[in-house]
Image (cartoon, rainbow, N blue to C red; front, top):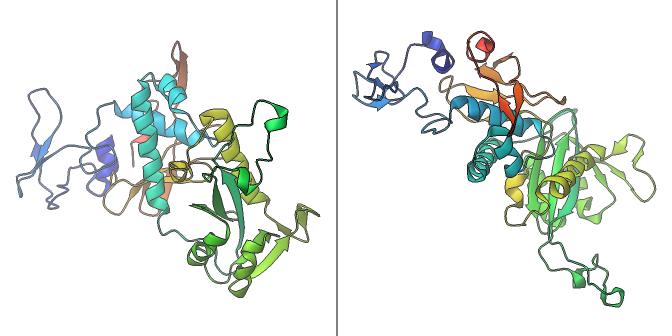
Length: 326
């Protein structure tokens, strides 16, 4: 089934990932593990070699279930909860979740938003650097003032295209993000921002609409509610799932914090294709196999309750055949 996805151009017949030879033959290990050996370069390879699932130790069904669960949780997923859902150790779930975040982050490098006739919202939200209040009232200070902070607080700047993707980056101040915004937002894009002076420099490069939050949240078509929605989900992830996010790992937690399509880089369907994981805005995750530009939506992975939480039901050719067919 996976062979028909990875080597769709040859109807599931193996192709050597090293030299491109079309005549590999089966070379099973003494344990019965499926391997292929190329007749051209004499290199042995597996079905998942050179893909996102290479050298896997868990069943592939567990990986697919982890991807579906991780993507469906738009407000974050803790490693402890993921370990209960998959019935694996905490360390396994922790590493697996970070690998998924790394795959998402790799697709965001060099990405751009906007264009002629498109609208994008720019805003910043501050995270990390929590300062515990003093026990006695007379010893408490205003933690909003810079003199009473610990210097670890960072601002997450979000560029959210309406009906499009969201780009994020971590900075020390909002003013330091201006060059990043100019490099990621295409010319001709109309930007929406709040009244902060940090965004004044963007007027020279883009047509902008500003909204003063001290007077209104939305007025004359100007608002940053989309970016604020992104930060709302991040704050719920910080408070409800992780409880604390260190500023040193804050960038690693950003890519999976919004309800957008997540693309995990893979060569399961060949060099020009990738395994696309579609995250709908409903509570049901679905997995789609994409070849080239086309995308085929398939039925979602079903999770059955157990003593350890939700575990994936057995995937067979009958109930999940579409997951693995071209």
